[in-house]
Length: 464
Picture 1 (cartoon, rainbow, N blue to C red):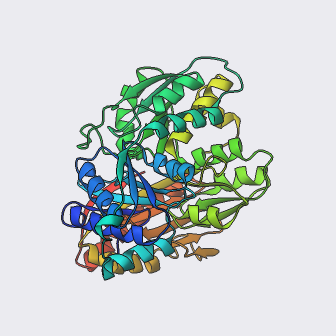
Picture 2: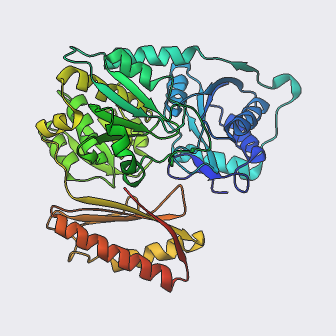
């Protein structure tokens, strides 16, 4: 049974994921024998307490002592796993719609499970695992002390070297679980946090939890009322962060990754690992620091961090791993570091990017939700052929995750099937705004043609 996708397990409740499956998964994870302890956090979704308790029951049935940290961000699961040399579990569907839920697992080093471990879990779920006898079941306890430890240690990492002003920072928390952590850290680094959607609500009543450009820019005028130095936006479980500016609007994720390379890699040697859907500004900034760039599979950059101690920064759009802090993706870390730099430099964040020469190249990201999902593979294969010569013969192809074609004018296109939802995703970059418009028009036509000839339907198109 295929359970794991791009990043953990995400499925619709109750037809795909439910209490019974969560119990089986918990029991299967216990059989891995990684640790006799597990720390569990969960997001604000209405089904998260149910999935949490069911997963805990499965782990306990396999002899694992479970410590429930309650409503808390996903990064805390990785932090707890490493700090306590235990398993970490986050019950979350991250940025997916509210009817989804899922699970992410961390090993005793704080790394998300590798694909090898994921395959073992799937194998054990398929075969079935027998629970232990009554005298060997695990215990259960509540614990919150690790939240305070996480805040203190992250503050020490993000403590400003100087404070040149006290900026306003708008923080949109997506009705998720970072409302008691991110604003507190921003205040401690010297900013004034102004919170929006800070109350946990699994219906996500104001906006979709995915912090995409097309979701957030309609709220820009509202965010801008406070005249903030920067606008920071989480998804529901706070492993992601988007950044907006009152004048420029949505700041492309590649520029945020390039900023973190510029900020965190000074004086370092080694490599930067980024996902295959990232563009040239990352290469430019890495080259300034003498770092090599490796492009890898979305959702799996942590595997390269585990394999190679020379990885200085690993990232994909919205997500950052800074190995000196920990090997997990952490949106709260991003927020704290951006707050720190804005406080130190006394300028709007967009101005800091400009002064550091972190350029904004024309780009586009589109996701096409398609039904039936069984047609996705065939449609992808059609598009793979139809778009290969979008701008002439490619000078390079990368098939590590979907297919990416690079062209001699600096443009590129990536086509892939989403690992979390029934979507075809297309990513594009060019040096020319006119050219990117032409690329988008061609992609739209080809996707609609491929969907039609394969007797499928496009349910939704999202941008950013």
